[in-house]
Amino acid sequence: DRLLGAGGYGEVYKGILHDGTEVAVKCAKLGNTKGTDQVLNEVRILCQVNHRSLVRLLGCCVELEQPILVYEYIEDGTLLEHLQGRKSGGRSSLTWNHRLRVAHDAAEGLAYLHSSAVPPIYHRDVKSSNILLDEKLNAKVSDFGLSRLAHTDLSHVSTCAQGTLGYLDPEYYRNYQLTD
Image: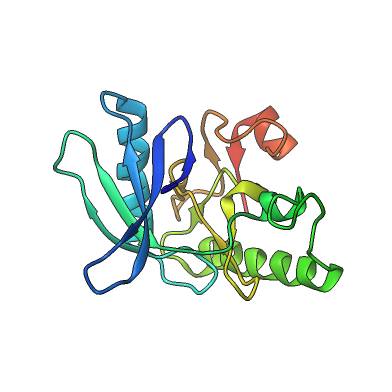
């Protein structure tokens, strides 16, 4: 009942600190080099950002065989769970006003990454399961494992396409270039 989610990188658990603060704990899979690399990338990215629409990294331990990240706990699950009705017995409880606010919050977080972070950051895996909602339905962008720092001296960056098929920008998928 403490498992919040799992993916190719590892698992996320709900934890409680000694002072009673609830947290989310991401553990990389043992022996999974790619998962470990994603966790380390996430630490590099999240140490550089601070915005109300981005999930906060509270701490980490990367010296273990299985790196661990500790995040603020966002209690009301993912946008995907709300849209699919898993949070309200089969029907989405999100009104159109809620949905607009969630979209606005997520867009603010992404705008911060692209325009205010130095260097700019490309998330590369924006999807409804990576948007977390708190009890007031404020949205926070999460899961920065595939994120990439931009090179400020270049007009575009060529890379292999990363992300979730179906959510990828078709131009990025076709050209392998990240641009503003």
